[in-house]
Amino acid sequence: MRKKKTIKKHPVKPDRKFGSPLITRLKNKIMWDGEARKAAKIVYQSAEIVEKETGQTFLDVLGVVIENAKPNFEVRSRKIGGAKYRIPQPLTNERGISWVLSKTVAVAREINSSQSFYQKLAKVIIETFSKVGEVIKKKENLHKEAASNIAFAQFLNKNKNNQAVN
Image (cartoon, rainbow, N blue to C red; front, side, top):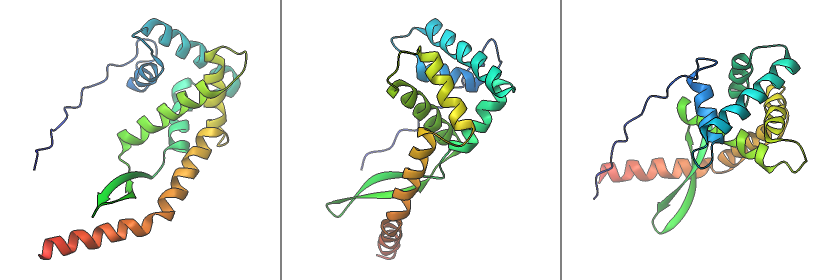
């Protein structure tokens, strides 16, 4: 069997304006073709809109958004005996934050309107802050799929126990 590599976790530098690595991660999700200044401009413009709409700081709103939209489980494919099963697995905190940020940016990109991207991003963040919108629906769908495939997780556990005995 091959050895699995251990991937080193690179520390994310804090953002210059807000001083938070979370904002840097959001900028990295938005960035295309290495255009960091455009991504930063988009995040800061959407931050202004979010602060005006909610009356709270952008970091507080983003923290609430992550708590509202972070799923508990993730469904991953495993091949067992020639068949592929989608098995629910619990998410780590870092993976949950990454999931929320990527889904937020993806939903903002999917919106078809004449608005600028920073306005779409602010709209998605505000919707998720108030526990409505597409990101919350994606989380609920993920939980439903995990609940429907929970039997496969029990099958996997039985399979591991049988292999340990043999």
